[in-house]
Image (cartoon, rainbow, N blue to C red; front, side, top):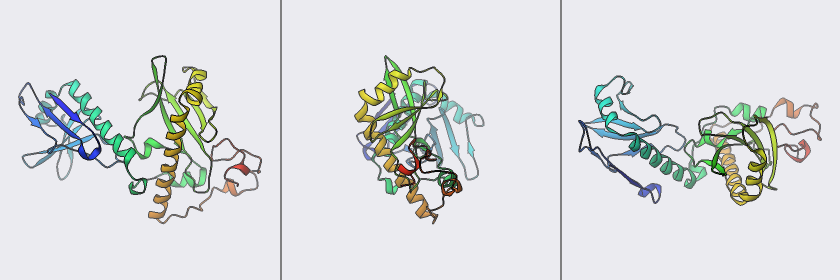
Length: 281
């Protein structure tokens, strides 16, 4: 039996009772279960201790882990872990995954952006090549962004320009048919004027016209609010990262500063606007 409730991240509780097998009657309660609450961490671990040993329910991979001073042991190397893992049903693993996603997602949305220590390993490309950054790259457990058309759900990954000198309001949206699939469609969405335009990727799998209509008209308020808020947060994450690591935000791409880019050329940040109306302002 599995129960959980989330009113807010601080009041979440979870109980697991194993009903069958060697561990029948074993109960893991809220005060024993500690989900990883590092918001930038991609692990799916819910930690618990037993006989002074630290374990984790990895809800991302449906397995039980044991932590020692020197290594992390999984169920392929430990019969106790395997037997405990087998006593948790597929349905319970699914519920645990839902609990973890709900908890981390809510915490990610509610957290003060200035208190999240995001890491940008690719910061040089961001500054020098105007590389855009995925929201899920920074907050991997944030709430899913998707749209549903005629009963089919389309998953969206959103990418942002976080260059300190850029004031664009365009977001790169990559759409796919499932959470784990490679993207099938690339769109650019400007949340300031609700304009949607095609990118380079379109493998003809998705109903482009209906998707654009859904984003631009049917769910315009949701997309405008969500994407503008995420863009603002991403900019704060990046600026705070630069300040913390004493990195100069004036590091610019040689291309941007070169004479080869005219003021009427498209801006290299990917906004789709002319350079003079974007980073060249």
